[in-house]
Image 1: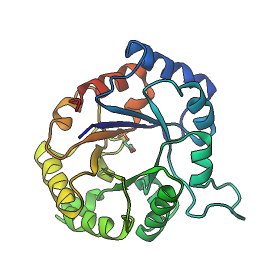
Image 2 (image 1 turned 90 degrees about the vertical axis):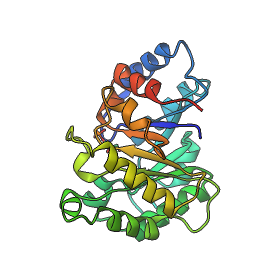
Image 3 (image 1 turned 60 degrees about the vertical axis):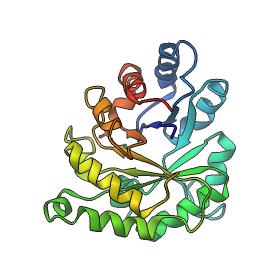
Image 4 (image 1 turned 135 degrees about the vertical axis):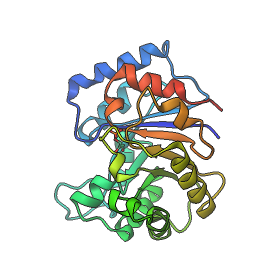
Length: 241
Ligand code: 13P
């Protein structure tokens, strides 16, 4: 399976950040290797600009969220069709920061994933347990419920990102065994041809060992995706297909 290394810029990046993507591409000697997919999900304000600027490069641009409806009276929201129109190829849905900050439930995440598919884009559906849930040894059960309730009914292609909430932005990661166990479990709950990403404090230092785990088919990278040097190292740490 072709690995997918996705950068989630979250609420970071003004127009000048385009230079960081240009540096990344320069590090690839002009074009990213075609045995792996490279995706950057900047804030919505930059999607159109990045998609136009990098249309000929082997990197893709994605959104970080969308509304479940195609259009209508929803001030401030952005539909998947609009993201497609701006040049996005993927849309992250159900990130734990959306679930926590905007009270998004599994059913909302599923509706968004289906909206992304209807717009002809690929959803990256995020799941992951909290620190309390892991301590209570409920991680598999919690992620199992999220999967059951958040995945679209039918889809040609979607991506699942396992992001333990307590590993996001903390420098903490689960043990390699815990990542392996969770990814084996997620694989058992879904299809063989779906890419499963790990996310949560992925760095140039830990990327190679995490990306070598069975059923880890890529990474969803936050902080380290903002710096061309770090993101390039993580992209290159993936074993190409
Ligand atoms: P960090 O890589 O900064 O921990 O963020 C992970 C994340 O939330 C990506 O979606």
